[in-house]
Image (tube, rainbow, N blue to C red; front, top):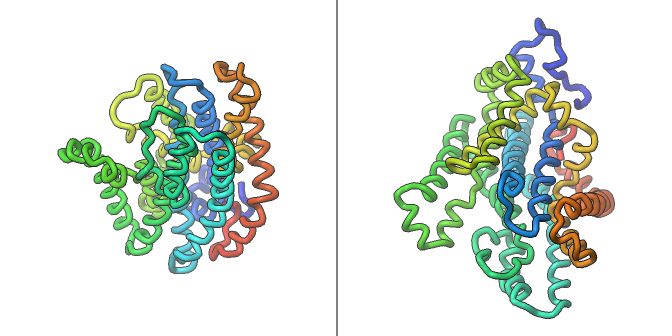
Length: 380
């Protein structure tokens, strides 16, 4: 728990009021359990990329760590923007984009350059040709729109699609939020974005859009989990919408923390409906982690190893694919044994990401913090 922040869960029942809980929430700049969720997300993604091919069952669907990342990003970015506007009266877009650039760009472009050097050095093949043909899309964070992934050879740097999705969210959401005069307006705007994406996928125009793939990709590139995470942040920012959510979670914290896990687990074992249902489960999990830090789930997610892993999850995401490639080349026997490849890749990726964070990213992160107009403990 951040210094100077009162945890409502630790207060006596008589002292806990919706107003006190909401005030405490607004002052809290750091939620340890969310770093734990980041760790869970990156572990799922790394396991998925450790598999030699598609796998049946829930162990073959842990790529859903990506929408969990999206839910976290939508919530945290919106929370910070709302805190900035509450304390300064405005959202400084230039400073926001500069801070995001200092956090994301250096390691991203360093890894992209390393991929380019490696593929230029090795014998040319269809995979390297595909990479260089699409290099401009990777460099401009538009790979999720224009890169063709349906090819019969490896797509180098293909994992960048999720980072492109997040960067596009950072480009359009803060200006839209800044223009909204109230949380209700911002919620309606996000619901409109969600509805547009779902209509494009499942509505009357879905068949026509399927024949115009670039347009379909652009119109559906706003991940629903990002919008849902932002909606949660808007909901918790206002006391009148915070109170029922807090009261529900406080009434039975163990149950309300477990329900999202049961829901997510059921969808992983027996998928049904649209992916939006899984995204809703992830957002409910974020809400439980934020508002029930003293539940069993909160204690697990707040464990020091998970927090340490979560804090360097961005570096692990960028570095784990080349690490997996190196391990497969060095020990071909691991290719068909993901149960061995995965823990080794996790440890190596974690080590490299920690070194990167300490010696490469930290100086830029310190500069980023100097550009933050709102001082809240623990903001990353």
